[in-house]
Image 1 (spheres, rainbow, N blue to C red):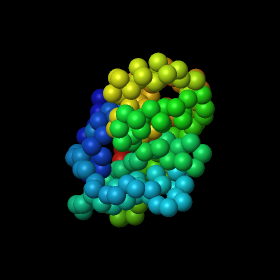
Image 2: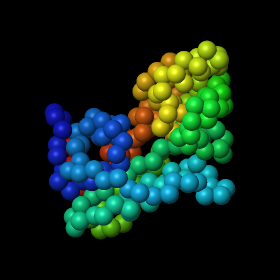
Image 3: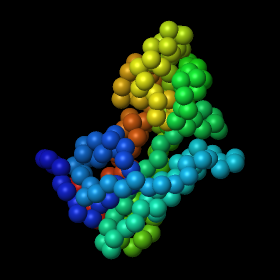
Image 4: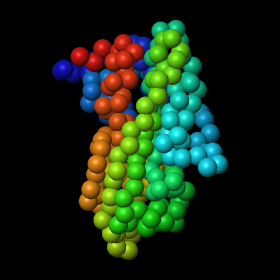
Length: 196
């Protein structure tokens, strides 16, 4: 498919530039972008897979939808075991996260939700396993100083400098960036968005 198609009925419930860029890779340019305002605090005892599914659905349903509009929302988190690593609060929190990820495998979960014109939410969850090399203190200092990890789930951006830390990845790379394209494409075509 050449170029990007503009779908008048598609609303992206996210202000993430990464999600917008990823959608463009599959030829989708949303008609509008909305910023859902929800509480993203994990529930007590909530597991990472359930957490991202719940947030994606809540984000999609939080956006006002005109008749005929389709809403797409997503949420991505990093998890070490049952522990959810949200966005770092400050540099000290970022250092803690990087030390936790150093030399071990972790999961990146993304929940994707599409609300079709019938109003019914459809949710999928993608899971990618990522393993970091053992990080030296100097490497952690270098990454923290870059500022790249702030504002990112798990404290890193795989599409940037942190990719140099990845020694193993199993699953969707686009999922780790913030939007699993395989699952997203399937959901969109399933509700009638023509993607060729």
